[in-house]
Length: 354
Image 1 (cartoon, rainbow, N blue to C red):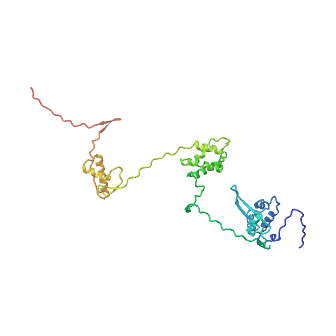
Image 2: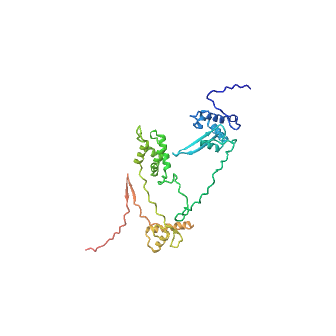
Image 3: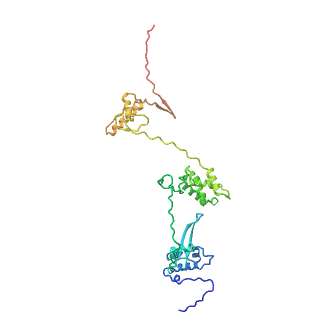
């Protein structure tokens, strides 16, 4: 094997052979680490993800290479929240593996501990004689007694713990507004605008409107140019708000069942203050003789139905005879009605002559 090596005069990086020949690092991991170490001082603070993109390492391969470097100690990361509330990730790469303690010491501006370096010498004793200090004076106790620790936990403030509860149909209203915003280019609403206008759209749905009605009210007659989509949407939601649906009074609850006092043993649901069922009332009315023609006919019909259901025979009373129909006499093309004339009785009186 022949080799030809020329030492570069500039733009080169020194890489340990242990890193190049590492048995557990893939080619992508070695390429990513060497690329990051070869950056100049001004560009060394760029994220490792940007280095992976410039090195041509794809997403899955970049994730695998980053995991390998962190497992072997060549990469360390810390995630912390800044004073402005934003979270940031700090990364540290090295050409030699570092432990977590060494990485923290390097991050804070120190140097890692060399395991082969001799231990620091113990400090020399002070040649001056030791002086005894007087004991401290006892402190005066505070007035009062310690109070017991309060029981319970402090209330955690969450997004749901608000003074105004959300509208029950706010989610459906937000979906309806988002659908209108996606289909109508002049009413492009941001997520914050949709969340702010969702209670108004929910009120539309609560009053009986459909998403189609909401779309028609928002998109009908729009100008060619809309300067404030959120403003015109809010104006139309308030101005074209449908009237609330009238509240229909609920029906009164039914009266409880009670036992018929007529002796039949039936249960009835009274309408007002009756205590007997219909059959017992009809029977009592027929017994007292206070029934009219309609009640009497009803009683006869009920008795006939009962008798037929029992398998017996019941004969209804005969109807009264109808009067004879008038006779019809045909005289040519005309029809004459001949009414029967009542019989006349002729009485003859004889007067004496003279």
